[in-house]
Image 1 (cartoon, rainbow, N blue to C red):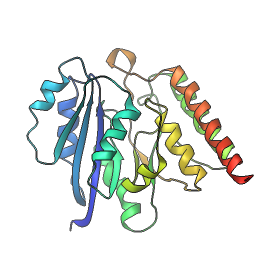
Image 2 (cartoon, rainbow, N blue to C red):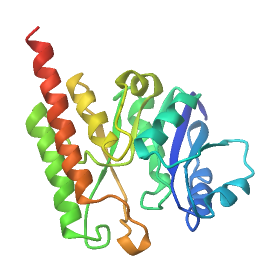
Image 3 (tube, one colour):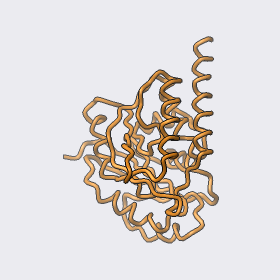
Length: 237
């Protein structure tokens, strides 16, 4: 039975002509327990992504185009502003995440156990292309846990499901990958701790188009420190 909640699946896309068709096909083939829409933001792609998106014929899919690349955070902001669902989840177009896991993210929300749900990746030899990538992810997550006295397992996960209204209220300003740390820092500052469910994951490598770098990790640490300082300042007023 379909539940009377609409889920907006937000997909930022940049130069993914080889994967976007499969990414959409896989996402649309999932048996969701509720109505969905897919809001795809082509973030200034310079390859054949636009042509691939032009060939999509599904009423559940809406495509928005940025004339210039603005970053993942900016693409998500555009998608959120256009979203018509009550809840949202982010799904990258790189095929690293399995959209079949999205109903698992929805389950704790639909049965009243959670408001915000994160997909927690388990890294192994088949799911992490680099030791330093995994260590960087663990370092950023540990920093968030120390700064906010929390215990989350995967800050940088793409799978973040929450009410659309809540995401809008966070007023996320980071235009790039720093949005992951900013979203989590602002949630923890509000004392909202994500409910986590295990998900499958397969990281691609640089040759396959992996975009995040060590600089994004440094930025994430800075953003977390900034959000923690804002929390401290608000408590002293």
